Image (cartoon, rainbow, N blue to C red; front, side, top):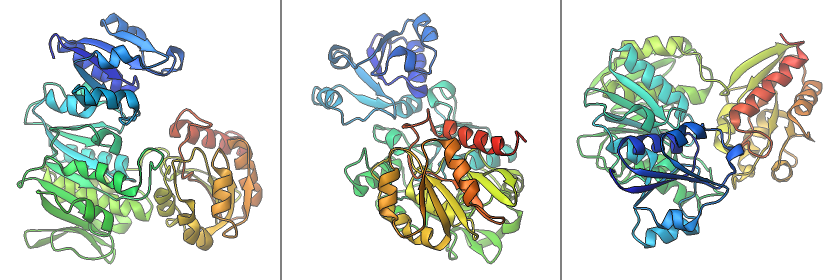
Amino acid sequence: MAGKRVTAVGLARSGAAACRLLVAAGATVTASDRSQAEALTVDLESLRALGVRLETGAHRPETILGADLLVVSPGVDVRMPLLAKARTQGIPILSEVELAYRACQARFLGITGTNGKSTTTTLVGLMLERAGVPVIVAGNIGTALCDVVPGLGRDRWVVAELSSFQLETIETFRAEVACLLNITQNHLDRYVGLPDYVDAKARLFLNQEPGDWAVLNADDPLVLEAAASARARPLLFSRCRPVEEGAFLEGDRLLLRRAGETREVCRVGDIRIRGVHNLENALAATAAATLAGGSCEAAKAVLAEFPGLPHRLEPVAVLGGVQYVNDSKGTSVGAVVRSLESFPGPVILIAGGRDKGSDFTLLRPVVEGRVKALVLIGEAREKIAKALTGAAPVHTADSMEEAVRRARALAAPGDVVLLSPACASFDMFRDFEDRGRAFTAAVRHLTGGR
């Protein structure tokens, strides 16, 4: 990179990390973001101090088309006309993931999927750490790879959560263990259709070699389709049936079968995190971690201790016999289906936000069976209401505080008030975490702050 003119397109967390790596490598770096400077959350002054030239408020053609290399943040659509023009001019376009991969010799364990990525990534990291394997956890989970992996040697594993957006612009990135958790409809505001989204996820297997591993959900036909051309050895996980090689449930036991030997990892009741989808995450994490040097004993210990991540089926309070649960990370239809399946009793569902091109009619079967009432917020509330007419009584609210108050009025002892939006948060909140905090604050207000 020394002496090259590099433009980082997008100045979120990963874009800033890419700038720091590029400067250290001797590149002349410009960072471009269409947002105004005051709207950005990264430390712009620290980047200026490193010599990064900052352009905000718009992407200038001369900055993009005059670069020797473009490094694109996940939030930037690589199909935008200016990047398309750069591509026709032969300017390389890389993701921050690809840049980080080229800056180290570490071994990568990559995890992607529509739902469960962060939980599974965290579990794998903890399992490897418990087994004494040198490991770093980074990627879409919150720590940019470019900030932590440069210079790492082959003795270190990097467990990387990877989104479809990050995978779009990899070239040489290779995960020696690649885990695809599930695929459901998502991000159709960015992709042409579901096949386009599946293709982006399948890029995780692009550079794998025959000696590598592909950890796959045997219960998900789209996962198996995406991995059909993978050259790596498959290792399956299944919540519904035994598999010849991999992790599966048998009654209340989580089992791991490798090379003809079957071992019990733990009992389902030993797993601390709740939800049927978290059983799948536990199976996937166990299978993946043992491929990177983990052990069944380490997996058992972690599954017994791990309380779950914030904003993912996170218990907030019990008020008047009603349980309040924060699942703000449920930003897709598939995620909400899985969350609702975790509660047998009546649910008052708070949903809505910014639509990602989703088909909300897919929620109808599970809503009809479990949801006592819908409280809808945000830009997508009318679309959701239309899609679910007759499935459950529909109420609307203009704020999270109002939604929680309405839910409380509708709930009876034994019910669950669940925030699981099936939408992005950016119409009303900074991100899903901000939305989850708003829900928690509204519930605590009901309880007098307790």
